[in-house]
Length: 396
Image (cartoon, rainbow, N blue to C red; front, side, top):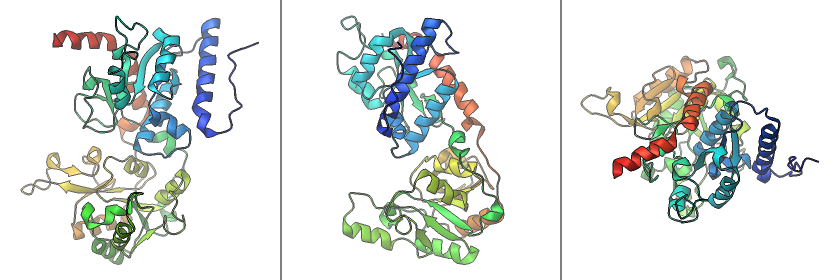
């Protein structure tokens, strides 16, 4: 009788991560017993960040979730054994069971901060059952706040190469992109342009939108495109604020969330369907560093990237630019069109050029799964204990 056989009675997606744990632990214990473990199977990566569990439960797929799922895919492709913990306390319990098999612990910056300020969590002379501080790595999407780990920013993984002292992991949209068919340009008969805007508030003048309603209407009139989006109100907005946001939206824009989706957030299938039938993706200035422009490029949709700040004396100097998506500011047409905010003629020209110059699927080399896997392997195999000892000695 196999007492560790996986229990597959869970039907709700809320327990998907538990089933994954059961199967992974069963496979790990069996291969250790039989002596036939696969490459890296005996190396456990313990994950307590909810950014991983939430999408497995069917939660909202934002940038952090996209990154988390790419990381999980890379770990599985490399043969590591990922185990999930629903909290930092649960992670501590799992660590007491698997100890030396656990190479690193992926936690949120907040969990790491909590752990370092609560005695039972971190391994010390007085608390030998804790988790060694050097095992903790956090995935943090932004530059700000990346230095929260007491050992330094190197223990913080970043989604983009910020050329900072953090460790660049990055992510790939290839697996998700591969699930959706490439729609030939000849079949995109509606000549629609998708607007990257989650919230209607982004169109209100107080939010400093990249393009006014007049600019959208001019582009529609002069190029023949139609604009669509799936934007909703923020829960905390008052009725008056909602009305102002709606009034700020150009007449040439169809908000499918207010129409055919009846106020609902589009599913992944609906989102990719709308994006894939578009001739361009337009940024509004927010959200910054979203994965959506990468999704668009992968399915053959160019991105119009707003330039938010630039050197007035030398506007073409990209080193001085601050854009909605700085990671793409070195990529040029026909893939990415960079337009200064408020530039009516530049915006219309970019829309026209995107409409007239279709692209094939494009994925930056750094974002291909093989590139992510190589960086992931180096991170898991890095001697973090030795690195931590060097940091401590340097501080003495």
